[in-house]
Every structure is written in structure tokens, then in C-alpha cells.
Amino acid sequence: MKTPDADFIIVGSGPAGVSAAFPLIAAGRRVLMLDAGNDAGSEEESRSARVLGNDLESLRADDGSSPKLQTPVARRILERFRRESGITGDGFTPVASLVRGGLSNIWGAQISYLDAEDIAAWPIDIDLLQRSYERVSQRVGISTNADLTEGADSGSVLPLGAAAAHVLHRHKAAKPADGSFRLFPAVNAILSEPRPGRAACDLRGDCLYGCPSGAIYNSRQDLLALQKSPHFRLLDNVRAISLTSNAGWTIGTADGSSFSAPRIILAAGVLGTAALLADLLPIGGEGLRLLNSPTLAIPLLSPARLLRSATATHSLAQLGLSLRYGERASDYVTGAIYEVGSLPAQSFVNRMPLGRKAGRAAFETIAGSLLVATIYYPGDQSRSYIHRDAAAGKGMTVRGGFADGFDIRARDLKRRLRREWQRLGLIPLPGASLAEPGVDAHFAGTLPMGATGPFGTSADGELNLHPGLHVVDGSILPDLSSKYITMTIMANADRIAHRLAETEANPAL
Ligand SMILES: Cc1cc2nc3c(=O)[nH]c(=O)nc-3n(C[C@H](O)[C@H](O)[C@H](O)COP(=O)(O)OP(=O)(O)OC[C@H]3O[C@@H](n4cnc5c(N)ncnc54)[C@H](O)[C@@H]3O)c2cc1C
Ligand code: SF4
Image (spheres, protein in one colour):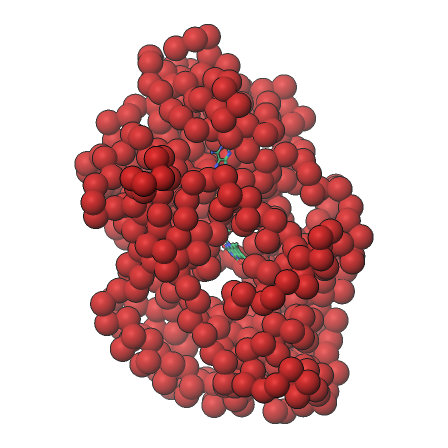
């Protein structure tokens, strides 16, 4: 190994990468972070540029994916990854990034916490994860939606939209008999109070197109804090393409440079990390199993809210929900309810079995009473694999699919949900859709912690057979519950970095 450039090199500046960096620099370790992206896109853009795109990307045909993935910023991010990463999809949409801040530039910011039952098969203690959850929550800033008319005036709260508040009241008045359905105010990584460099949410509801005030957490914000430390260095426009072990590790980059350190921490996102490890892993004909969350979107109408005006609020998740569908601990779906009023009319019109003109007229009449529920299944309901693409040299293809019997479980779940919608006074509208695998962007399980063999990692995310090479993104989560995943990715990266910060400076040599 040439002279080390740092004690640790972290690849990736998304939520996982920054979460690993803080504990290391606090312990005085020298951290070099490499990212394929740069600072572009952080400067103020006019609202029309954010909504329409500099090249009028918003006017391109609706491709049927979620409205969030069709905004100009999302298209820019996803297209660059598809162009440069060498990863393609077959029945799978590869949602990943090569930009500073990763997918936190476009995420929905909804937060879930795993409990002891969720991580029963992991080689770690829930107490340690909970301590990391607390540290990360403090850092990113979290708020809960609350019905302010009910006097919820303390804590980090943002107002619940009127239609969502109505649904929550109905739920409290008529709880389900067996407790298998839960509905609660959503918890989001949005600021209700300003912080240095970030304003509090202004409730204008522009969130779909990116938050101009920084109220929604984006890991770029953390980079500013990290860059104040003399122990931290960020190099932009550096795409790692190879990893070589030689008494430590050397990273080769797309522009021909190389960087060395005793320990490397991969935080390139599950697909980005798989691409980087392609030459080190014996990926055979069957491919590398990738867990993702099959996702269902259901448009809903609240007749009681027809022709009523909407309340000012953000347009991210208003309510969270969960519903059990089986006996095993992981047999539950998690979801969110959004108010539709602030979403672009076109994405709704395209999904309605009406002509354009009639669809738009219908949208304008009922927008204030429209909601959308998104439902995530656990990862064991997916059957997706990453394959090496012999024809494309170093390229990889992700083949997406669903577990055996998924269609029967999905039908049964829809029936159970219909019962709950009825109890809540909601009418499911035509146009419910199951997304193509990948669109969920909840990925895990390629390099599970605690597994033996060449694809397993230790409780510290160290890849079996490759000492000094750690992974801290979703790749190492051994299973994928249906809960929102990013807070757990960040907490797990924080936990691992605390452990690494305690190790000797050069133990991998
Ligand atoms: C539309 C959308 C909505 C979402 N909503 C939610 C939500 O509500 N709640 C939730 O919990 N999660 C949500 N997610 C998922 C969330 O965004 C991801 O879980 C999270 O961003 C993963 O963080 P990460 O740091 O592991 O990876 P990423 O965010 O993907 O970051 C990867 C980083 O690695 C860099 N990188 C990749 N390859 C290389 C390379 N070869 N060399 C150098 N750098 C590289 C990239 O530039 C990037 O900085 C959503 C995602 C999307 C797309
Ligand atoms: S409404 Fe949305 S875009 Fe506006 S400040 Fe709040 S979170 Fe940001």
C-alpha cells in the first residue's frame, strides 16, 4: 500500500456515509470521503426551474412511475446513475445515485424505528441500535404531524392536513376489533424549528420538487458540518471503480487516481456497493440476492371532505399505518397516507380511467378530498437478484421479481385494507398500482451481517475474507422489514463507526 491518505476512506456522501464519518472524526481519526457527485444543484434554483426543469424535463411523457421519481431533480439523479454505473434493470428499476448527498436529495423523509422483534435475527443488541437512533435523530431533526386544533402545542410538531386529521379522528372513534391495523401521525425528518443553515418548514407544500429552505433533511447539510473538522476531507467527482488489497486497501477511480487507507468503508448505496465489489465477490449464475419492498399505491377519496378547503401543510407523509397479514413477526406491511391536493394534477389524471379533460376537471373538483396510500411489504416478499452481465464487461443486471404466492397474499391484503378504508370513511378509487421492483428504493440484504461465507459481513460490517473492508449501507441489513429503512441505515452506520473509532489506528495492516 502506498502512504495512507487517511485512517479511513468512506465511499459515498449519502445518509450512510455521513453517519459513519461523524463518530470517526470525533475520535480524531482522519477521514477521506470520496463521492462521485459534486456541489452542483445545491445553489438556489428558481421555482420554475425546480418544477419544470432546466430542459423542461417535466413536460416529458409520464412514464407511470411515482410522481416523485418524475420531478426534474429525480430524473437527473436516476439518469446519471443509469448512464454511468453499469447497472441495468430487467423487470427492476435501478433507483440509485451518483450525486453528493445520494438519494437523500429526493427522499420522502419518513422515519421508522426497528424494535427488538424486527432485529431478532441480527448479530447486534437493540440497546446499541437505540442509542444510535437517538444520536442520529438529534442530528437530522425530526417532527411529528399533529392535529393542532386538539392542542398539541409542544414538541417538534407540524400541522396535520385537514383530510388526514379527519381520517385519524375516524380511526380513533372506531378502532379495528383485533388491533391488527394501526394508524398514527407520520414522523418525518422535517424541521419544525429553524437550525443554523436550515429554515423551519414554511408549510407551502412544495416538497415534491425539493425543499428550498433545507427543512427536509439531506445529507449534504451534514457535509457542511463535517468539513469544519480538520480531520475530514471530501473529494468530489471521484467515482471509485476498483478495490485492491495490499497490506491495507487501495481504491482506483474513474479518472485514474488512487487512494489508500488501512480501512475502507463502503457507503455507496446497495446497488453502488454491489457494483464496486463485483470483482471481489464470487457472484455465480444464481446472482446475488437483493431484498426490496414490493410497493402498492392506492388512491382514496374522503367524501366527507368534498369541496372543503385544505389546510396549509407539507406534502410529505401525513399519516403512517401498519397492518398484520400473517403469523410471523415480520408479516406486516407499513405505509403512509399523503394528501393529494399539492401533487401535480397530471400524475393523477394519467392514472384515472377518464379522458384528459374529464380527468383534469374531476381532479380540480375533488383534489382537497383525495388521498394516496402507499403500502410497503417486507423484503421476503421480493425475489430480486443482481447478476454479472458477461456481455457488458463489468456491468450488472438486476432482475426483479416477487416471492412465490405473493399475488395471493397481495389479494388478501387488499381485501383487509378495503375493510379498513370503509371503517375510515374512505373510498378506494380505480388506479391502484403495484410498482415495478426497485421503485420502492428500500434495498437490503446483499451482504448480511452475521452470515457466513463470502457474501457475509461481521457485526461491524467487515466483509468475510476481506479484513479492513467494511460496508455500512443497506447491503448489510440481514433482513428487510416493511418499515422505512433510512433511519436504520444511518443508525447502523453510526453504531459501526463508534466501534471502529475505538479500534487501534492501524489494526487491519
Ligand atoms: C423517491 C424516494 C423516496 C424515498 N423515501 C424514503 C422515506 O420516506 N423514508 C426512508 O427511510 N427512505 C426513503 N428513501 C430511501 C433513501 O433515500 C435511502 O434509503 C437512502 O438514501 C440510502 O442512503 P445511502 O447513504 O445508503 O445511499 P445513497 O443515498 O444512495 O448514497 C450513495 C452515495 O454513494 C455515492 N456513490 C455511489 N457509487 C459511488 C462510487 N462508485 N464512487 C463514489 N461515490 C459513489 C453516491 O454519489 C451517493 O453520494 C427514498 C428513496 C427515494 C428514491
Ligand atoms: S412545505 Fe415542504 S418544501 Fe416547503 S419548507 Fe416545508 S418541507 Fe420544505
